[in-house]
Amino acid sequence: MLLVKKIASLLVSLTIVINVFAAHQEEDQRTTDSLAPMENSSPNSEQEVGVEQNGHEEKAFDPNSLIFEHISDSHQWHIWGDHGHDFHIPLPVILYTDKGIEFFSSSRIEHHEDIYQGKHYSYKLEEEHIEIVDPVTGELDEEATQKIKDFSITKNVAQMLISVLVLMLVFTSVAKSYSKQGINSSPKGLQSFMESLIVFVRDDIAKTNISNNPDKYLPFLLTIFFFILINNIFGMIPIGANLTGNIAFTVVMGTITFIVTQFSGTKSYWGHIILPPVPKWLYPIMVPVEIIGIFSKPFALIIRLFANITAGHIIVISLISLIFISKSILTSFVSVPFTLFIDVLECLVAFLQAYIFTMLTALFIGMANEEHHHEHEGAHDHH
Amino acid sequence: MTGSIAAIGAGLAVIGAGIGIGRIGGSAMEAIARQPEAQAKIQTAMIIAAALVEGVALFGVVVALLSK
Image 1 (cartoon, one colour):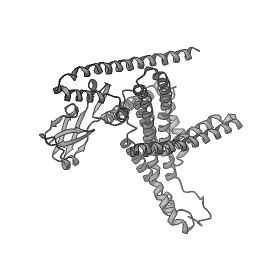
Image 2 (cartoon, chains in turn green, red; image 1 turned 90 degrees about the horizontal axis):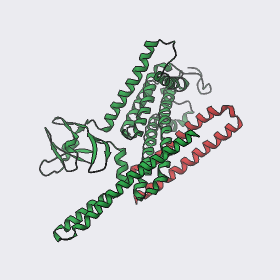
Image 3 (tube, helix red, strand yellow; image 1 turned 120 degrees about the vertical axis):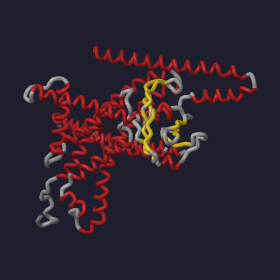
Image 4 (cartoon, rainbow over the protein chains, first blue to last red; image 1 turned 180 degrees about the horizontal axis):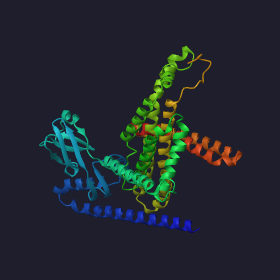
């Protein structure tokens, strides 16, 4: 009963906070509204009125751009605030052009019109893409732009470095407590929590799926599991970056899984792909299917992780945007509890997607790694 | 126009997810009713199967998002 009361008061306070924020936004819009009619006097300022009203129109809420802004990568780490008066941390831009390396802070190309004169070229930011432009006219220089390799520390890269740091801190402290306490004493604190997760990965994921030498793959599986889990969790908190919902990140994870799976393939694995144990007239069908199967399995892993996490974020932002689209405070009484429910579901999805990625990786490694056993006596005589 | 066709496509993909996960849940309930002691294992298997089916449905959503 006490727990229900606490949850109810939490929900009510959350609704009130969001209502206050929504009311403040409405006031802002109303004050800019009152400014526009005053400039109607002279024909000279007619252009200004047009621009002012255009500027006011642009302040109308656009959920699409908000959603894509939250999901995609950026050269600044946006902490709070709206367009015009926001607080963000500009991250460094590192470009590898054909003339040499450029290194500058992204605050120099922050606003849409800024052109920064670097050591070799002049740069301008166009839709999160850095382009080389002519310093005077601002025209795009196509071929030089295509030769840029962008190695900047963007928000996602910085988030990845932070996750790596957190993981290293947690795991080195857990490992150290073994040397301090010895392996026979009971675990305490963070160590007991981490141990249950690690044993879960070792027993339910590695040992169930990989029959031949599972401990060899355990560091890899543990890394995938905890890295995806912590990046999912960071994506859910307001200040975190959406890393696992970025297709580039998931493609790299899938490629690494693919490489590990193929390199752990035994001769019988490749034998079954090139010469599957079916009647010979089925080969034209079975061999392409098997070869496509090699590539489609990591591809499914990639798309599954990316789509699940991105879909979760889009749903949460859309539900909150409903309040701003309807411009009414009363919508929040429906929207906020629903968003809370979806957020709890996202917590489950964060853990579940990490588990599924790791389990399927272990399954694929296990399938590739299997010791050859005599399962098909009908097709062959002896091996 | 492409925007609304993308939305229709996403909606159709979600129908598939709904049917799939509904059937998984239904079989899981029946199995638990038959043998309540196996509840934990059945629940785990159900969650895994549901996540896999949802992955397939989200393929469709990703294509819809791409086309927009």
